[in-house]
Image (tube, rainbow, N blue to C red):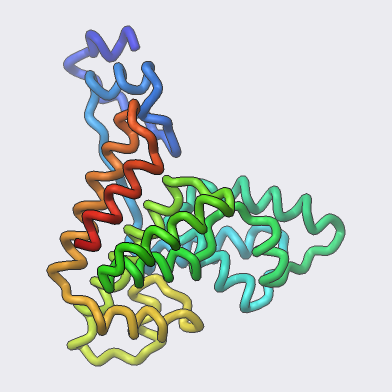
Length: 233
C-alpha cells in the first residue's frame, strides 16, 4: 500500500489476483490508487481451459459429468481447482465421477436453475423470476455466482444470435459459444426468443449490478432482486 501511494515513475508493478472481496477496506483503498484490468478468456477458451483442468485432475469424468463441469465453471474458472480437490476427497479411492457426483459435491448453482431464471427474465415474467430467485436462495446459493452465470448466459445467447447468419454446423457453433453440444439446443431455442439489443442491455445492466455488489453497504439479495425487477419491466 505504501508503494501504491508513491510509485516509481520508471516501474510498472503488476499485481495479479484471482477472486478478491472489493468490499474490504484494504482493497477499496488499493483500488483508488491503481488501475484494474481484467483479462477474461473468450467463451470457447473457457471450455478449453476447464477441459484441460479436468484432464489433468486425475479424475475420470464421464461425458455427462464433464459437460456439467464445463457448464458450471465456464464463467468461474478461478474456483475450479478448489472444487476439484473437494471432489477428489468426496470420491476417495474411486477415481471415476458421474453427473450425480458432481451434483452432490460441487457448490455452484445448477445451470438448469439459472437457465430457468434467465428464461423467466427474458420473457419478462417478474413474478416467476422472483420465485426462481427465491428457490435458489432457499437452496443455499450465493448471489455472486448467480449473477455471474446469468451474465454468462446472456452473453452466450447474444453470441448465438451474432453467429447464426454464418450457418455453421451445430457442433462448431456450440464450440465457438463455449457450450457443450449436449446443452446447445436449449440455448439456441432461448436465443431465438430474444432480440440482440435487449440482450446487450441486460449484460450491461448486470455488469453495473456487479459493481454495486462490490461497493458494499447494501444487501446483496436486495440488489439482485431489484435488478431482476428492472430487467423484467
